[in-house]
Amino acid sequence: MSMVEEPYQFKMSEDNKELLFKYIYRQNDYPAGWKKEFGKGKLFYFSPGHTVIQFKDKEYLKLIGRIIKLSIVCDQGSV
Image 1 (spheres, rainbow, N blue to C red):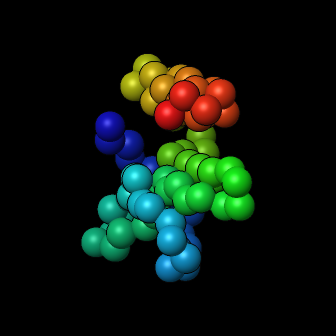
Image 2 (cartoon, rainbow, N blue to C red; image 1 turned 135 degrees about the vertical axis):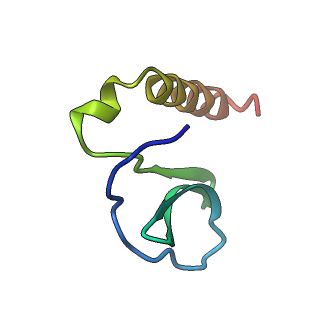
Image 3 (cartoon, rainbow, N blue to C red; image 1 turned 60 degrees about the vertical axis):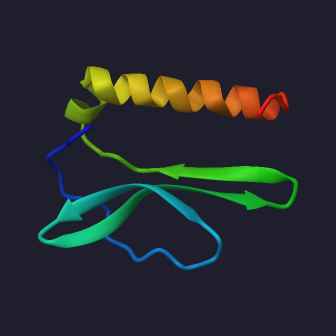
């Protein structure tokens, strides 16, 4: 999936996060999605956009749907 947008610009700390998505903006990489285990659970962070245009994109909506389904399956202990 590809989007044209200015990303939230921050550096990701190195505390056992697995980078899943990244932005390339002005020749720099920025984290856009990551996961990590935390206690007995799992954390997932995702920041692919912040305008209405992204939230209307069909591929973006499919991705959000997959993330929701995966979180439900993980919560039920099936993964």
